[in-house]
Image (cartoon, rainbow, N blue to C red):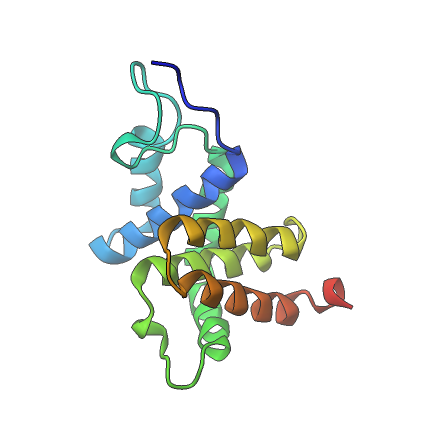
Length: 159
């Protein structure tokens, strides 16, 4: 059986970051514990395995993965305030599906990085990831929230 084509490493890193943030929140584990688990067991190639079996993310850029997870957790209070401010009033943060919440937190964390990629690239990457997880309106919600957050954090890029 031929190996599937390689995914984009930066996209794979973001997918893994969303999964790790979800896992940390659900299990109550620290970010460093989850990062360590992912680096040892879920990222990179393992002999005899070809892809995304059992939640594996073989082509991830490990440095970006670690940076996004750490930045999200480090700035979570600020991120959550911004995130809550972008949601409709009748939609509190904890009402969000936990994977969608992790995705939006990671996206906002990356938008907060002054040396990160352009805002539109970040938004498109997380929109693609949302479409991978959801088939309903969640991807549109992620797009709207991240666009609003990006305009707040990086307004000059939208002038």
